[in-house]
Image (spheres, one colour):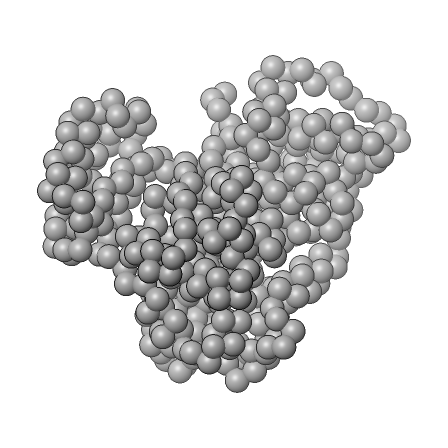
Length: 449
């Protein structure tokens, strides 16, 4: 068995290692063993998105955890950030999410939250993995009354709905707004329409009928095109697209134009600074953030710092540097004054609060930054050697950077969750951006495909 944990938990094709029922059982056992360091009866929350394979993984995890004498609290389909909240709220020892986030339905994954609602640090993930591979806990077998039980928490969705609504200012309402929600046939399909309608908005939903196989299927945060059309068709004030597990947000303005995570981050940073609530005058982003975002922050005299790509690394740097706001271009936005992890619904509520408070349409708010032309190409790869060891690629990157001469940038990196190499080029010249990105992508396919 190779390394289990990647940049966002364990992930792979469902029913193929490592996402098999057998390995999920072992992950459940090892996680339960780590949890038992605390006193009293132990409990682990398990939630999932809408993938058909979630049933298989859920039952295997539950069996593994109960076999170690730890109880399981089952909440069913719920956004990933909802599991983090319930874990904290129920004072459980850990929370486990069965989801492959934005990946297609045939994939699945397991993410683990600690008792404080934060994703597990690398050291604890490594420890869990060591218990699995070294079989140190193979013979720990509680019996009789010491075996764990499983309980279903029927009011978990209601608790999460109240939690999200409480992040929206009391003196504001969404009354008078028409919103289109794209739930990606994923974990937000129940909770999101309730939250926004209860705050007063007229809500139109699309992609809110999951069947286990249509999650993220050309819809949601990764594919906002359908939402862009729907916003214009219905004359809506905004569109909100979530990904399959609900931790990302991509917004669409009233004109049908897409706002990336960089736009959302810039709008919220400006608002927080004006309210004197942007702690340390700092926003955390990643190398994937657009050149235009950095320019906008400079104009606003807001400091930025760049973390590794991945919301867990953004959050890690936020905690280290004392920031309350951070995020990624992909739509992962973390508001540490509201939650311990990225939450697409909470991000949408903060954006709409700014819209209501300012009286400005999203298209006007989005003018805070001008995106530099960017081309991102995902290349499927069959192997992943260290990129700095691929001499032809490194030479091509150097030539591209020389041509850009400081008026753009090149970023080539592997995905942390899929067998993909991402090639990103940014410059003020769209044709040059496309040409360089396509040439580098072709070389990556030649060398690594």
